[in-house]
Image (cartoon, rainbow, N blue to C red; front, side):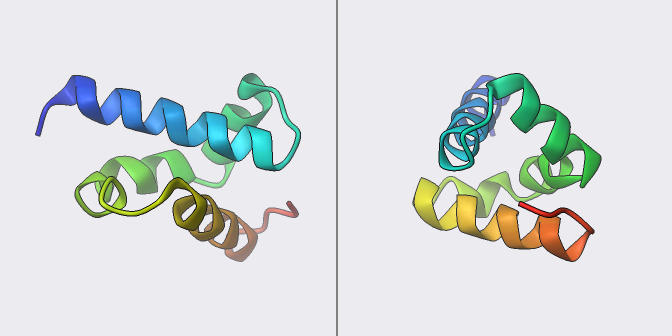
Length: 71
């Protein structure tokens, strides 16, 4: 898999997460990093990029909550 494609996809997913929760991109990165969601996205890119951003934002939100997040 192309590294550039992975990076672009994860950046876009972070942006969608930020929009959903009315965060800046920097705040979203901080939150998602704190709860290891970015690592999760990197490991599961092969699956994630075949799904909708809406679904993936829901999934990473639920993951973060399970890890102690409160958004």
